Image 1 (cartoon, rainbow, N blue to C red):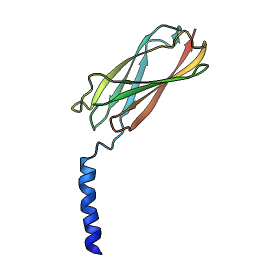
Image 2 (image 1 turned 90 degrees about the vertical axis):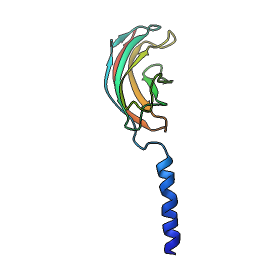
Image 3 (image 1 turned 30 degrees about the vertical axis):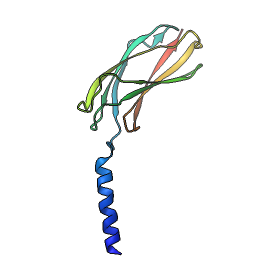
Image 4 (image 1 turned 180 degrees about the vertical axis):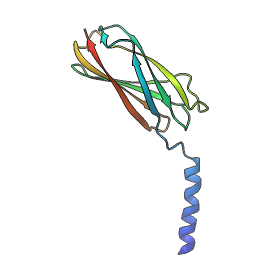
Length: 127
């Protein structure tokens, strides 16, 4: 019986060692160029990202909550497994189909293992 438990223990070690990282990315310092936006226009923003498991395969999710909620996910170009932190620039905007009003923009990073970061958010007014 003890041999079976020991064998199971040793089988788990290689699986854990071969898997991806187990640490979710962390976002900080969200900045957007303005809080007053116009439909159909784009605006720059940035945040800092950290992931001790590396940044390759990173995705950024932008979610707008408000009169016309919408969520989109984009691949982050240029991220590598050797990089563990970086400034992350992005561009955001809402199309002409969005209803004017108060929105919240939330950004979340998703790493190559599907682990999600904390969400940073900011208030926007769409005209």
